[in-house]
Length: 114
View 1: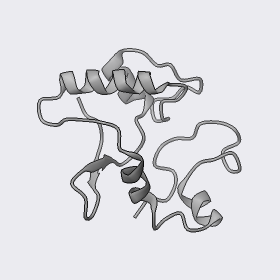
View 2: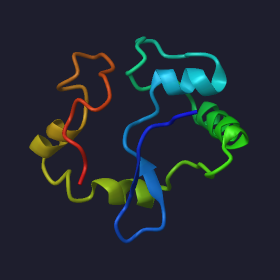
View 3: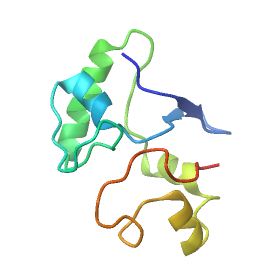
């Protein structure tokens, strides 16, 4: 089971995935792909909080080395605090309505966070 690279956040006691969970990763853990826009390198979408909790539970059941969880709001914001100071920087780092053609985009195609 390979979930990609994790990055230790400076000054914190946790690591966060380098990318959102891809459809390939979701499929390998849960055996299904609920996403509307299909593609192995696309992030999984159209999932609920409960779906994510089920994914994490299944992931933790299979993991022998790590314990996985969703980041808190504070942890999530800390990962972006220096990168998203302006609208232009948001567009450089994130897919959103203005730059995505209303479709899910492949992971790792935007500038990485600090």
